[in-house]
Image (cartoon, rainbow over all chains, first blue to last red):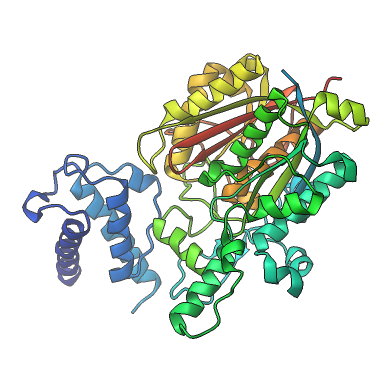
Length: 93
Length: 403
């Protein structure tokens, strides 16, 4: 159980770095409560973030309702983490 | 101002060669979507597409034609031949009074893909010397004009998914103004090739499972390919020939969001529909069926239904709305034409085709479309929407022929 928590927290840190890089946002502004719109993360940035997730984790995330409802950085990380874990369970390494 | 009528239709799609085949597929909810492996895509994520039927590939397997034409022009010609035959046009009916307006978003994608791959692998290999005239977007229009000797205005509109609808709309305007007497018009697209497909995949607008327009669990569109061509004529010209009139084109509206390149805005789509209604001179409650753009992406469906609500108000609940894209796929530049052909068939049969794969009303979209099976209609007029990347919106209204 603790291992799972550790790996999720590690994933979360990796994803924060990924979102900062692909979304062209200063990492210090990327706090969980920050609104994506306030960070100027628009449709094209979103596609870049999802592309990077596919490249690094192999998970293809289509734009569905779960994604359309995202407001904050925390929301984005929660959905991305869930989809990556689902993908890893479907296709064990 | 001349009235404009439809005297012939032709279609090539995942259902096969023939306008009746795509209509029968839509009416019966029989999808052409299947799993398809693109050889040059490593780790292809999205498997389901609606490729053209095997009879189309067999019909175009002609080395002489392939030297000069990409599949897209071959399909446009097939669709045009069917439409011309139905309209009963003879050699004397073309010339300078006949225009050709066939739209496409991409042009000859296969030729582009094959040659770029060849060039990248071995740049001393022989590049196809006909690549440019095969890839150019207007190839379909020009080949159709050449086949029939149509020497009037030859135009190619390239506005992504609005190409087909805007082509038909422009043809209506030229016919009304009396610039031409008849026009072969519609759209064609053949983009199911590795490079272009991978580009779509990276945009993340395609569903990894099934396309479910308006459904709460929808997560993207499914790509198709094909061609749709209509013979439009002035009423006077059709009556002078004694042609059978299939329907009348009564309204056209088109707008640009002039906002985000990709994210649609309901003002733009509502504007196109309102313009089309005003152009037709009919009230919203005279529309009995809407063949929606209905891609099945989260953003399109919310936007399109919001736009429909603004135009139709509470009456929207009394109108049959469906998307036939899960059946024939999103055929991009051909979509407006193929879906107008389906809409004309729906009007003539007084049957609304179903939105297959629909599971559950989405409170964010708030529409209960025609789903499950086709539903009877009792209407004089139907509307078809095409809403494109680039913020371009086009709406067409077709009515029963009452002459």
